[in-house]
Image (cartoon, rainbow, N blue to C red; front, top):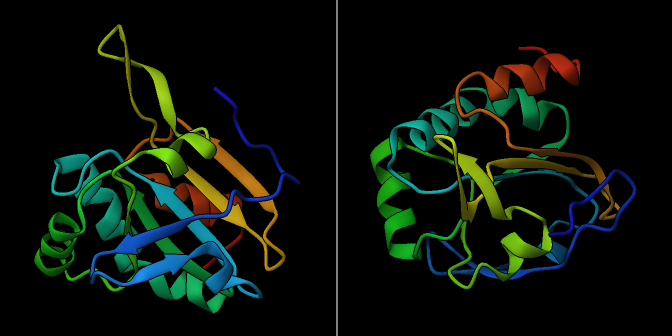
Length: 156
């Protein structure tokens, strides 16, 4: 499994969002992006993480970032998730897991002491030119957004 590092070009993608619209990474060229990867919509940890991004979205947008969520869920499930939690940023569907794999966010991981294959909770900061500035793998659902804000000197 290949993992991304700062300076790497962010892998291009064309995916469907929670509204059924096609979204490409190229659509965000000229903008900074926080792409966060989570295993499954409407699960406790993923809901906590999504709501933390929602509740702190202005901190990221004020710093010039667009926040995007990415999971292997179908667009219909993502739409229910957005609606149930009042999420106001795009949620992208990668059913094939090709984009997740390209970002190094799908593969072997430890779960309750066992090695399994699945989505690796990750966050990527991508600059306005499409280069990765941070690639964080195996992040925690709870407290992650606060840590991102602290580590990147983003304030409320």
